[in-house]
Image (cartoon, rainbow, N blue to C red; front, side):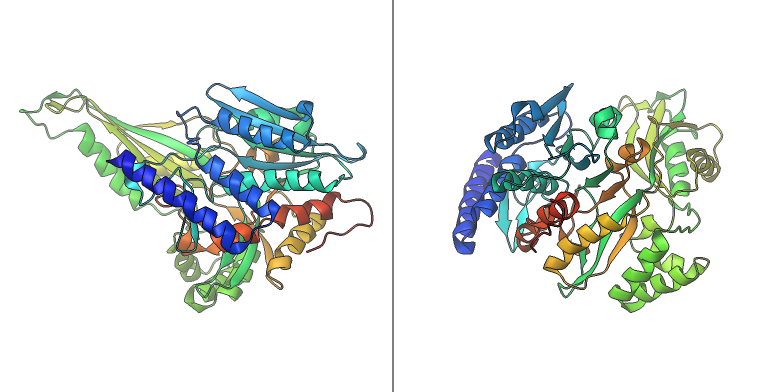
Length: 471
């Protein structure tokens, strides 16, 4: 039954997007962009599915058909996944290259949980729905179609432009680390990332602010484990690994780290508060003026969209416990994911978790190797180029740098010495963002409205001397 429903959904999606193309009278560039988008959304490039190499091969084929030499389009396989590196040759090697980042993988989605098939691009109620529509296949498509468009136009940049698409950003970033360790890529003057930043729309559908990501919090996960001798379930004991762990998690749930700010977040709140208005906007403005204003900081922290920008956050995300339904659990483990504000160390956070849990018998283990990346000081030329692209669509929209509460490929390039700025072409309302969740979507208008974004930026930053890009 599910297969029949998904097949019907796919047929409907095809008909819908075909009708859309006819209704909008799409240009050749728009048709190409939509075709690429539909194709890559259909690829289940989640961890464990082994589909990323196929997506890399498809994109590589499209770029080669557009005229990119085979030697300049490289698929770098890594286990079940892969990275894609594409070099757009410039007129001179005197200037360092510019990198363009995005990731081909997605968080997995179970079709039975979605209203529509997550791996069929479907247009509904003014949105394109599908896994990866915002995170991050729009960015992949947009950079790919821009390189193809510029090549067909005969554009010759004044330096090399390099696409570096990773294949496992959503899990372990092994391909990201390998790309950042490549001396040629690490020698870039700066990187532009399609996986963060972007425009915020108000509830009235008007733009409020455009943000450029220039910093990221530290990503760290901890396994918290309770152990016990166990026994038969017919002989319950007062001490129980699951209950001990649950009690600790309840205390960690109540843990609140201190409100913090820095030179990136304060200007962000000043500008965002002015555009946002209302009580939340007033709290942002007050906090920007006085970061010690506890009431204002707590008001911002109460909003899930902004809590990560004012404090370290930790939340339980995974559980594993017991070994049989008729046996007392011998162990119970919870994974707690933390996003750590710059200035606070991983050890600081671990100590706070241990203190909050209040059970010395619990084991706390830091997973993997948490990555701490520096702030990328905003560049005038980069901000001006991004501003030109943004203002071609929404004049007068303020641009401000901000700190990402999540994690992107950018952190590894920053560590490698490459200043990195994330500048997605997407404008949408916070209430419509479902990245990593059910029914992920992008507004149809945002999809088409952003297709000139990277072309304008590239022509501003790497066009021939004296040339300017048309809006």
